Length: 350
Image 1: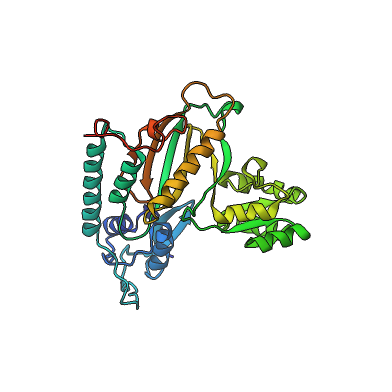
Image 2: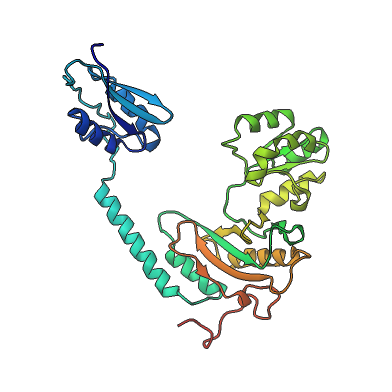
């Protein structure tokens, strides 16, 4: 190598800026239509492409690519053409069309926010608006967000409970159980997807980033195998717990209850609980019964340290909904005489 000159440092975040930097600092005719593999792999793509050039090398260090000129003339020659995908059915969206879609959605969101500003709705009204603002491309989940007048930093103001639902919430339920012996057979008969002890623990350790189970249950004797996995299961809300009914010796009934439909709730640091209750196209009766069961369960789970008003706010939305629809608390609070009733003409929003 006659000469090695550092001619630029290129971040791996954008291959577009990578091409511009190369063209600017080294006069290399970097093709404008070079393939883009995605932001997470642009660094690898850049290395693979630049290594084809006879006079340019690439060094990687801590997420950044350093472009070096290995020629004595400082010029690149015989720049190869970028590889072309053989899949003719793959069409990448252009920036202009994506920008238009974003602008349309942002405009629709702004319009929806203005329409509901300063208003609250009954559950039926909120459900109708939720369906109106949902996307039509897939069957979204109806999500509920409830705010409480609680301080989760205090042990006597924490909500942690499991509420059985009369109908399916629409979410995929896949259950793993820590159990052995007769209780393991009972869990399998009840419909558990996987039952084990050490083998289940090994799977969770190896697949800790992609755990495919929505619920993990355990018997009293097998919890000692699950406890060392607390750092993996705890942040995901999967650690078996007696308050949630996921740590019990009546394992068959627990599995059946989860399979039928059960939501596990825990208040977050800001004093909110969020959960899905049904699909957008679910029958109204099922949605109403699930919501009623949710609110009654939260009433029964009221912490001993709660003082004054219990529920302070509520919103309903869908998975990809434009906005959260604010609900009138007195129509969704079980302690209110107007619980699950419809607003009168005088009470309806303008």
